Image (cartoon, rainbow, N blue to C red; front, side, top):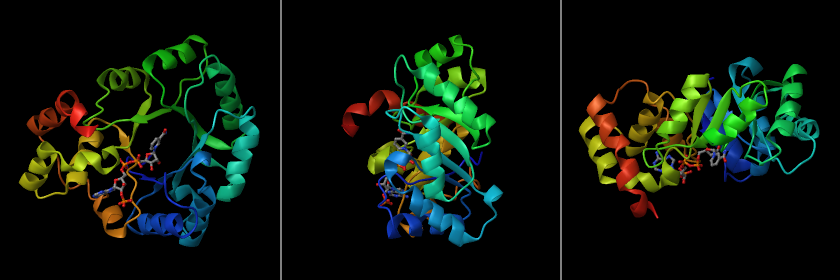
Length: 251
Ligand SMILES: NC(=O)c1ccc[n+]([C@@H]2O[C@H](COP(=O)([O-])OP(=O)(O)OC[C@H]3O[C@@H](n4cnc5c(N)ncnc54)[C@H](OP(=O)(O)O)[C@@H]3O)[C@@H](O)[C@H]2O)c1
C-alpha cells in the first residue's frame, strides 16, 4: 500500500476530481482514496482510464456507507462507477454498533470473490476493533482515522501496530487549519519545507499512510515531496506535543 495517496473528499464530480487525479498521477501518486459517499467515483475512474497506467500500478480505495443492507450490491455499484474489476481496499466508512460483525463477514466474502484485494474499517476506536476481534473474524488490514499532530492517537496507533493493522491518516493537514500553527511554520522555515510537508512527514514517521486532499496542481505536487528529508526526534516530539496544547486554537 503506497504510503502517500490523494484524498478526493469534497471534490466536485467531473472536472475538479478528474483534473486533480490526473495531476496526482503525473506527480507520481499511485494511490487514490474515494468513497461512495463522495459521489465522485466515476470521475476517479475516468481519470484512471485516461492515464493509461496499468491497473495494478494504482492502489484504489473506496468505502461502504454502512447504511445499506448489502455490501455486495454497494461494491458492485462502486466498481461500475470506477470502471474497475476490483478495488485494492474496501473500507466500512464508519462503525455501526451491533452490526460490526455482520458487515465485516460481508466484506470477507467480497474479498474471497476477488472484488477487493484487502478489507478494512474507518473511524474505529480500539474498543470497536476489539469487538470485531472477539467475534473471531479476520483482522482488518487498515483502520482509516483522523490523525495529525493535533489528533495524535497514540493509544490507537499502538493498538493497531500490535495487531499489524495499518493506520491510515485522514485529514492529515487538519483540513488546512493546522498549517498556520507557529510550531509547524517554525519547523517549515528551519527545514526549508512547506508547512504541509512537515505535517505529512510527521504522520509518515509515525508509520501511518497519508491521504492529503488538494485540488490545486502546485499543492498536489508539493505534498508529494516527502521522501527527501527527515524530522529529527526533537522535531517529532515538538509536533507530538501539539496534541495537548492546540486543540482549542483549532476550534
Ligand atoms: N474515512 C473518513 O471518514 C474520512 C474523513 C475525512 C477525510 N477522509 C479522507 O482523507 C482525505 C484528506 O482529508 P481532508 O480532505 O479532510 O483534509 P486534509 O487533507 O487534511 O486537508 C485538505 C485541505 O487542505 C488544503 N491543502 C492541501 N494541501 C495544501 C497545501 N500544501 N497548502 C495549503 N493548503 C493545502 C486543501 O485545499 P485545496 O484543495 O484548495 O488545496 C483542503 O482545503 C479526504 O480527501 C478523504 O479522502 C476520510
